[in-house]
Length: 443
Length: 143
Image 1 (tube, each protein chain N blue to C red):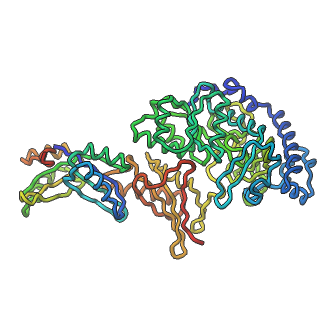
Image 2 (image 1 turned 45 degrees about the horizontal axis):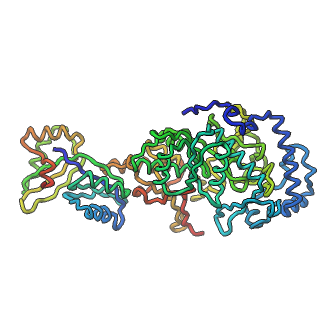
Image 3 (image 1 turned 120 degrees about the vertical axis):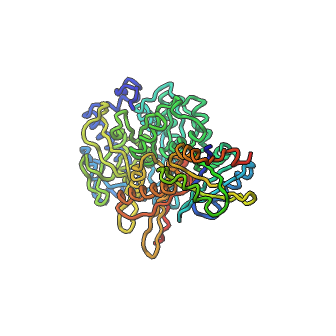
């Protein structure tokens, strides 16, 4: 599925110009901005200053971009420990926006923006969408949640800055989403990939053929998704699906995005400096090695993040992209280091379950992993919803399907799991991020 | 002579058959024949109803996964040998029965057999050639 837009996005939108900055210029800009942001954090953020002091470092020690490796990491727990405003580097009178993400336990994580930060955010999301082939005249349905979550407003501002028409539907109410998509002639949608899968199902039930609609581009993010999922989405809806990456702690959506080459996600390195480290030791790893993505905000004012541990596992792809962007690319994020489940001593990632289920031809069912502990032993059950495509009135055919699913899961995971076929619509649908794992093990 | 049967996927849990039954009842749809094929974990509920189109639309709208398949119904005398005589007609023809179920018509002293054949057309031709007339939909539904 090829985009009709020329790969050289400079012609599409002036916002994309920094994507093609000569490398030497880009590195010089990064160094200049790194020095400035480290000074700013040192001056205004108590936690950062004390950590540099402990190491006997000062902002003046940053002489080249590689010196970044000397700086201490920032962890998600630092945001929690300093809740709510402890990591702000701006006074409140300069902060124009606060967002908060759902912490898994207790207090949320708070992030702040100055007007300049909002402008940078708008520009990077605009560059993402321009890279996805969107421009003035596109009608963008934004089904990311609006509110404390950064997804909705982030995508909204970026799309408006491109000159596109934005329909701020936010999440939920699939029937209305589909009605508006059809009635307004929507050409692009932004949402989580699992929500779009839900819309595909619902459209079919409503008798709406997405392939007949003007919809041509989907910009999907906020959770990891796979190549098989992309194929399924593109086949079912005749759109081109792009992966967008971001996290609230850094800015929100717009840290990186795919271009029409669909060969990794370009990181907007003029604002966010990427490194890959060994998730165990924290040692920097060379391009092409898989590890944890660490990001530094090079231009953020209100809340600079220096070497933030994202917990996302990926690699920086070596070589240059066919699209001509000089920005380095990360591989699509398949898993997070904290997504990992340990079942009877074996490491299991939810994305592996998806891979196994997708191997069974014609099925991209809704699924959920249920973990329990019986007599001290972990049990993993994968519940799979029976779709019309999978269902057969012959018991033998259903048992055959059950066995095929069982075999595929055993093979991919390397451990024995229970497969349960469940009735359609019994697994809770995602309005935002999918809840794939229910862990009922008590330690 | 082919009759539309609707099948539903149902988990083996209390109440999982009641919901579709209640739905059909509330729309005055009569269940003429019903058979539950089950495993430990789940079952397949097969039904012949007075209005299969309406029934499958209603069930799908409620989120049930529904499959419509063609089956053949044959009436036999309800006495020993009624079934054996009929099966004898199919013997040696290579016509494969995927599954079958039966229900009695007590007042008429007859039984009705429902067959799912791999090749329904071949089965109908064979039955007709031995003088057995599969029931038409209207006869089965007593319309």
